[in-house]
Length: 380
Image (cartoon, rainbow, N blue to C red):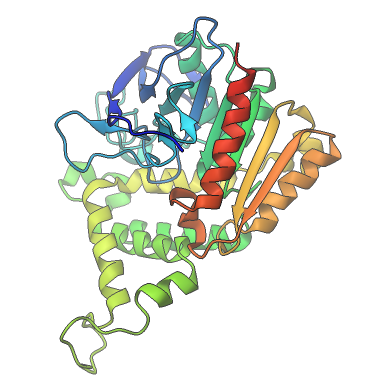
């Protein structure tokens, strides 16, 4: 068992890129910055770097805490740090905030370098492939030519998969957790309903709400409530809330009051989300999820799409994740095996739904620890 370690202290960093980054849409973005954090030390031959790709509402703050700040723990702190499955005593871990986000990298809240006006709805549409290209530029600046591994869960897993196709020579291992090779129609539908909630909010103003000094909080709240339902399993919601009423309440026979505990919980999550997340960012990131489909350019054949990949893979899925069901991970496994690639696959029987990839399931953590122990043994 790992020993006890002092908390990992995280330090946010930014890097400026003056040159234009061509985007999949045909647009370009220049004079942009990327926010990122690093943990551990890069070894002398620069062979121990692990890139972590974040999911929809996360950021570059993946591990550790900020000095002097309570409750500032990174979103995957149980996975990354000294003595943890991705051990920062052995690996140099990097996490980059994606373009278009609202956590430090250039996004809709920033100003266009030519006009000086806030981008708002004019921020260009970005894709998973664009994020990977931007991450590659940052790694170039850091002098990292090849990654020991790229790791991501959910939307981060899509980025990890895309890394193996866009820069196959730069990735030795890819760890794809609770992810998919593309979204199902049902997933696109959930994203669209959430986007409609935002764009039909009277405070949205066509995405230029900054000019009006307002925030479309009502739409953001509903979008978050919809998303949160899809992250949890039915079993977890029933176990945690069931049909319980709020404390001390009897039925009010009202169509508008908050009476059930699950209603109160969703309202709380929506309120909290609307206080820190940007509406245009939500639209951009969910659209990037919709667009990701490496098989599209290969007549729908995932096997042909993954023929470029040369990395070794670990895929992990969770039995009750209906948003990114295990069968979607198995599609990737089959396509890689069709290309005779090295693949390990773990399907974890866990009750937590999609959010299981963030939690401390002993079997899941054991699989991750074992795999990264193997990567560590390959290091010089």
